[in-house]
Length: 87
Image (cartoon, rainbow, N blue to C red; front, side):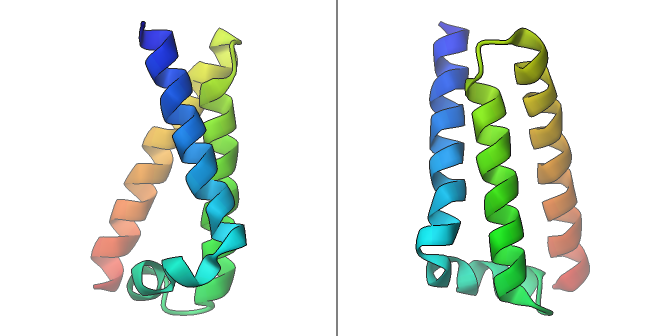
C-alpha cells in the first residue's frame, strides 16, 4: 500500500512539475517573492526539479525511490530556506 501511495505522490509531483512549463504564469505570484531575480527562469528550474523528483518517486527501483525521497527532503528544505531568506 505504501508503494502505491508513493507512486501516486510521484505522479502528482511530476504533474505539477510539468505544469510549470505548460502554464508558467500560474506560478509567478508564488515564485516571485521567493526568487525575485529572474523569476521565470526559477519557475522552469523548479518545474524541472519537481518533474525529476516525481519520476524518481514513481520508479519501481528501490534505490531510485530512496534517492527521490532524499532529494525531495533536500529540495523542500532548500525552498523553505530561500522563502525565509527572501521574505
